[in-house]
Amino acid sequence: MNKRKHALNVRKDDTVVILSGKDKGKKGKVLRVLPNEDKVVVQNVHMMKKHQRPTATVREGGIVEREAPIYASKVQVVCPNCGKPTRVGHRVVEYGKMVRYCKKCDEIIDKE
Ligand SMILES: [Zn+2]
Figure 1: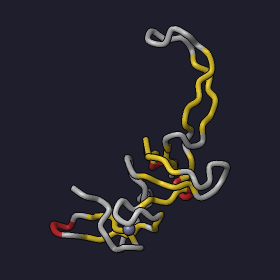
Figure 2: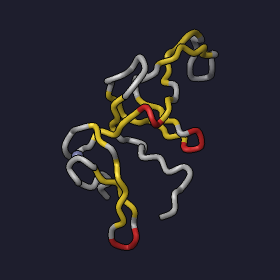
Figure 3: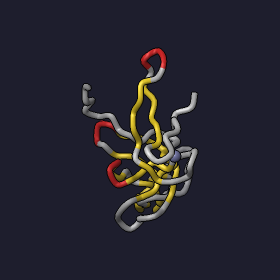
Figure 4: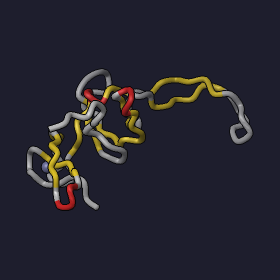
């Protein structure tokens, strides 16, 4: 089987749990996936202070906290079916479509 270089197991809108670092054990929703860097941005995880310049919409500049990307290998997908952090497998279903499934409960994660 071909191994795609940037096949991340994590996708936008997944719920993930953080496996290491200061946010270990936290759960959050994936806001963005950066496949070229193997990183993801998770809501309320790995908050970094950033200087914000005043813009047309934000009159006040100052310091804001924003999520910084973390390595995708540091998160694990929480299965929407069994609710457990799990390893994700890939399976080809009809029409050659590739879907992800939970290795714990064997349910398909990607619903249409
Ligand atoms: Zn499951």
